[in-house]
Amino acid sequence: MRIAHFSDTHLGFRAYSRQSEHGWNQREADVLGTFDRVLASISDYDPDVVLHTGDFFDVVRPSNHTIVGAVARLSEFQRKRGYRPFVIVAGNHETPKSQDAGCILRLFGTPAGGGLVDGVYVAIDEACSLAVPGIEVLAVPTRGLGSRAGRAFSPSGREKRSVLAAHGLDASLELAHSYFALSEFNPSDWDYVALGDYHIRKRIAENAAYSGSTDYTSSNIWEEIGIEKGWFLVDLDSHQIEFVPVEPVRAAIDLPPIDAKGLTGKEIGDALEACAGAIMGDFPIVRQRLLNVHSAVRADIPSATLRAIRLRCTHYRLDIQIEAVEGGYLPRGGGSLEEEWSEFVRRRDLPADIDRDALISAGTRILMEVQDDPEAPLD
Ligand SMILES: [Mn+2]
View: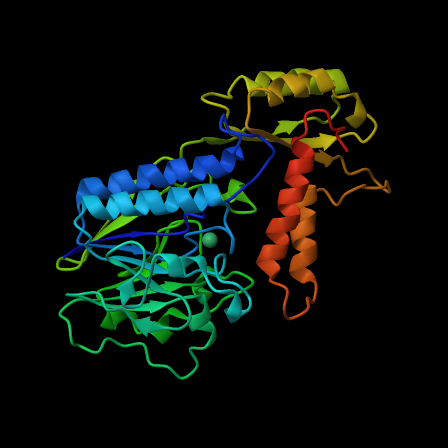
């Protein structure tokens, strides 16, 4: 028996201000395009069961474009594979804060199936065993993690093969927020533990792995550059795990940083232009770091140069680090505004009903949109 494990597709994700030819947000169209590629890739391998470990949608209420697009794709995918099992475990992004708001994933199915698309099983409210034939699937959605206290996560033994699928952060990732320790799931009792929430592909045990996000949808995508996106093909009989890469439809390019120490505004402009020679492909997302910029020359960087570079990108992010001057005033701690914002929110005590990650993403998105305006001043 073979399963496909993918995660964090974030359909409905929006960023920057570019529009597609159909008037959608360009990135919203992109993530759906990447979703197409992933489904096509999974189809090629014809697995018995498909597992999606959460953040299927980016938001609690995706746009109609995205809902219609997702239903159409899932229906067609399931039709072609004869409605064999497709499991979705709800993540934090699509789970509303209050239960009475309902979850969009209910459209597709329930733990017993029975939704709009045949063969789809969905876990939203609690850790539960799904009615998937021929294999035991224990799903632990975001809400199920919150209410897991005292629960034993072991297979019942009623099926020969068993998989645990969860959305949340494992303590070994050493992030500020961890939601569980892998040992709570008794990983060695399961054939495979499929994990979602962490956007960088990572195996955390012999048979437990995060497949990562399928596209660049985090608040800091730059830590994901150079790590391939894709999905895992897991053979539950041989316990082989194979990574199948799938390139996102839009490239993200992190240009080499420029040391601007001693450079004038005009010279910085020339250096930016030279680096921008490496911008290839179809309107990529680009970051350029500019180090040790003297605070007085910052305003002299030719805006025409920046405008010309921005026209070749879906998003051109210029991170300007002002040179530290002995006893001088440092306007912004050295990091970008987005970094400062996320640091600020990370350290602050927040009211219980405010989701820290959601607040960071919302602020980051607004900052990126403002910076993306080609006519906007540098500061
Ligand atoms: Mn996610």
